[in-house]
Length: 403
Image (cartoon, rainbow, N blue to C red; front, side, top):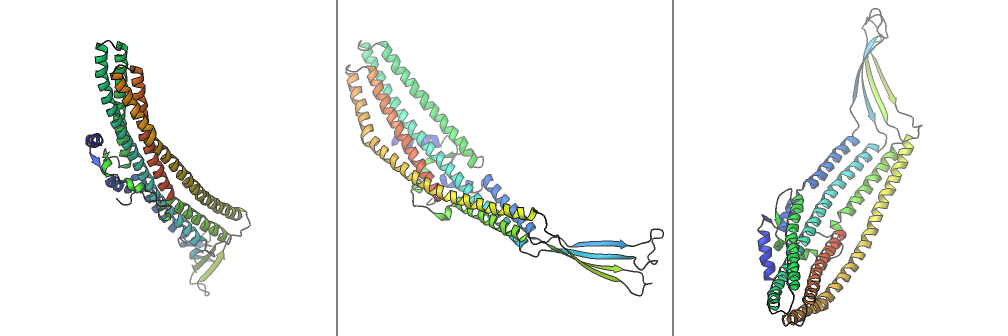
């Protein structure tokens, strides 16, 4: 443990550190989150456009002026008409289109929440990877110290003529291999910090592992409150339903009403004229019918997507539950039996080697076995945490609670 704390302290001070809680705050204002919020605002304004009646039309019409004289007084049909026209929907088409776009707008707001959860998931994955690498570094450091002690013993055995020079070279080669692994892992830590900079708004910061609330990964069952993906699909279904209603209503044509006032010459005792007219299209084509059918199939598609998500979610949760149980059992056997046997084997072999009763090949074989088992323990623990993270993410659990 003291090696772990020392290494953790040194690495966390290599660049400016950020706590897990601070990282979560930065995620909430991430550019990808802002993008979805702005898209939501665009769709909301589009909803206002879709629900509007449109502008009132004003027209000035000079009518029946003689070609030769353009006189205002020669014909009783000559005049200047001012008219106003407005289109009126006879159905709830516009309000349904508006509601459809409002639902789309809300779906993007929900997507922004899900994007925050996705970024927090990445933060957790990087945290787990960083912890594993730190544990691997400690494992390699302890292994390196053990190899150096064996090298000293080997030099004594060589000076006494009990082992050949090739044995010394093999142990030195093994030390250099471990040193290479150690060096590579330190670079992998830097690579993680580079990946971390994306979710930290481009800031070059290192995550402080001591601030990570590992208890958050504890599974507490499905939580529909934070299942934003399901809420997104529900909003899309709601939008498709309003679209279907809108296209159904669209089979009733809009009506345009116009009122006109014609100014005539005072020479005509009948005075000025007024006029009014109503017009609307006759829905004889197949466009409206096809648009409605398309909207119906769109609603069915959204229903299928939502149902498929629900089935897939339950299936994934069951799979993750069994995978976690399997991994826990494997870890239990590894820690209670395999690891103990490997430690005893290396201890017995190293003692026997110091007495000249075991070969350096047997020594290195015991060392490699124990090292691989320790590294596998680190890998399995990290994998277990990733599975718990995935289960909580799929179930809709909050990824930053109790911080």
